[in-house]
Image (cartoon, rainbow, N blue to C red):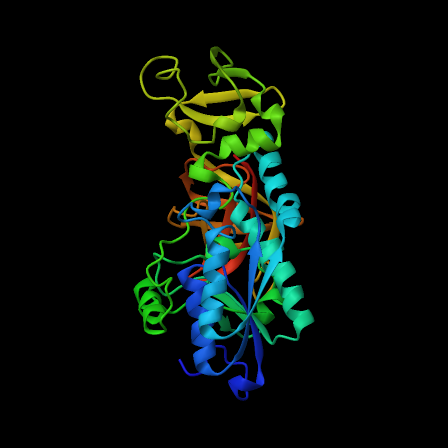
Length: 372
């Protein structure tokens, strides 16, 4: 990998900014670029501080991770900057995360983080520094296409992060680079070991970075105390089956922890079918009630070579990060899109992302506003 960024000229002609989280991926990227001869500056974001995060393994952007990034930068002999973005992160990521749960949605804060503080703000900082590119450790491929750069799935399907980058704009892609997109994770760790980086065996980040131990409801209640408002659990006919202590404890498709047993006729388990924040009702029903064929996306970010035609486009769509893509047809709908699925999909939740692909190419995506 003599010139991993393909910026033209000699690598030493270019100053590049690397987003360094303190993990093995971004540390390896920084090391590879130094080895290739680029002039490198590392940027680490401090996004939150839970106190315990200093010792919490698998965290991100706080505590020990910042120390790890600083140590890697020192080892590589590059400039390193820690940016205090706590206020921005709280306003642009944490507050919308809590508001989304109160609205009966299931949000993905990692996408908001990528769209705001990690890309928009860091790209602005990199531009102010005169950097030729902002480089990250994401597992996704940036490929120059017929009308400009495209985003494609990572070569290693198990590591692909394109789903979380659906909001990346064309202007951002012009300056972004992802050197790890063609690598399996084990190769990344091997390179980190060869470069003498002590994060080579560091565990990957887990869960949402600002949610300790995965207890997201606790964070929502801390940010929005009204999340504790109680309500009813009802079946599809409106019959009251029980009560709850806040819709924030429920997500579409949830089966465990309802405390009501089977469906009203006792024949099969109950699932959360929808949430009604205005009445604070949790509506449950059989698994068959979860199947949807049509999905409305809002805030579509489209990266295709041409606008979506009136007859739509045949695509594959991922409706959850860990779910396989489903065949569908996408149609333009104002500033959003309509997804018509070839086969019903279950557990589709407002607030999640609908990310659109053709083959390995990611064509964009939007937020799920409604499923029918």
